Length: 147
Image (cartoon, rainbow, N blue to C red; front, side, top):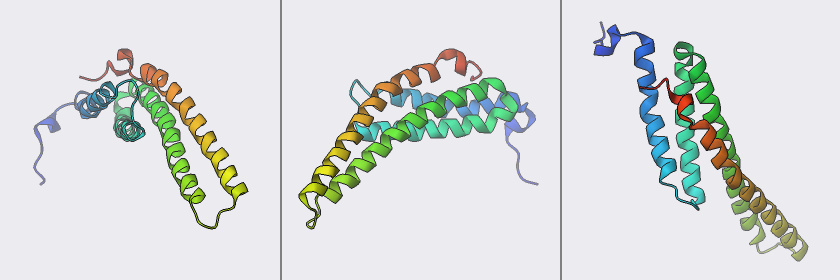
């Protein structure tokens, strides 16, 4: 006989949205605090927060239905673009480490430099893309089902 919480007598449709509300509010605050030119690490933290919101939202989708599914899809798109952004950060770091090796030839260093430039260009594209995805994902109508 495990002890039951007060909420155990309530309808799942009334209780479950509340479990998503806090992670969603936390993510919104996190994004609001970013500023105009956020650091790569800050965007990575937003990605991790989006992942938490997405998983929580997907978990309640069987009860909440289409509104939660639509909200999860929007957050997934934010998570995806910020994941691609983080991939460019990690790739550039790896390329720079490889370029600093003692045994590297000049042509290899040049090629690695070109690859670094490609990662930076891709990162700039992703930085330009993610705010629009966030704006779409964060519209009030997508989250109207939350308390």
